[in-house]
Length: 346
Image (cartoon, rainbow, N blue to C red):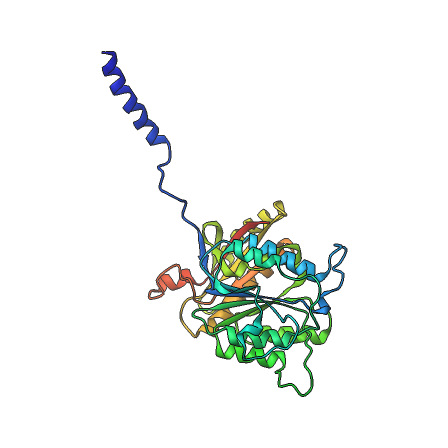
């Protein structure tokens, strides 16, 4: 009798436990969505970066290295092809020689640990004068790989072209690259002069997916640097939908944005990633511009209504990439005309 009671009770206990405990289904599924195929970080080791950075006790170059290191630490591993290159390393640069590129991390599969070791080797003493034009000329020999490439370019907008050498102006080279390759520039600007600021703004205008980010913004929030490379679909708190070919916020979404604004006010260490999308009607370039306007409209609304600092509202835009519904139906297209709001912690 006692044996029978044991035989019945023990299996029954395990059965009841199985109803209350979550079943083991292997590793948790990632919620990250890769939004580019490849990326390069182009490091500026020039003399113009060898200046004190605010009251940090560091030079701007040392802060640049710190930003890249901490950005890498926050990045999920999603199978990118990645590279880490300086503007130049001194000496003679031969435009046709791949060996002259002297990478810290030669373009291949992204491995966070190996990339981190490469970052550790970045210099914090200058290797020569500003060479923005060389950095862009190098990219011509590195681009052309399959898929979209994001280039994160640190610069103060200065170059050191020498009269008599056939080196193109940075803007000319940037336009050439944008026309020839599927590339987007994120320019991390430490420019202080009007001329340099205008140059970087013009470089970001060479296509619809490029932008300028202020150096101070990523110094304070290093995780912002590489945020455009992925979308965290598991943390999208809300979505704002738009009418066809429009970027004005409809009245029905004001409560949604009020909830986001209140959350950010109560959680000063959090920030929002605002990702703009479109349906697939129209050209790719037009839709990328439209998705940019949508993301920036949401940012402007949150800034104006809730006085959220711009550095806590990161607009990214992707055009008709990553549809969440079938673009072959009116309802599907309606759902794809959106800005997703992803809340992240520093």
